[in-house]
Image 1: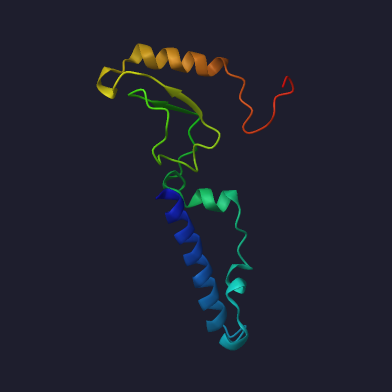
Image 2: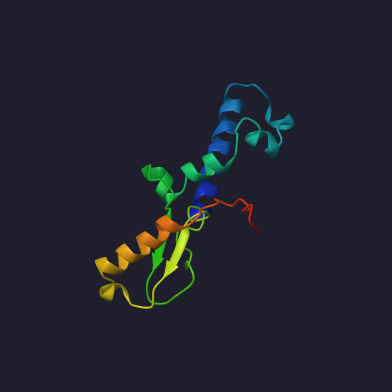
Length: 123
């Protein structure tokens, strides 16, 4: 849902841009194509990220996601924001997850060589 909501927000910006251009009579509706609505908007990863749930709150993307219950899937959780997150799955359910378990995972996380999508020179 987060990705869909981001797309909707960016589309809304484009439509507002189109309406503003028509209002300013910078072009007429007859010669205005739909693609021009997006021409003055720099749609990139940054803009898209600003319109995700975390982006709207000013929260950075997570570095580490811990998934309890032994599941190895995100279940549509922060799909965009977790692109470069490290992932840990533990077999216990949330109520049994302890601070010691969290500390162990964080210590392992600190030992990882993060590449953020890059390719390691040792591969």
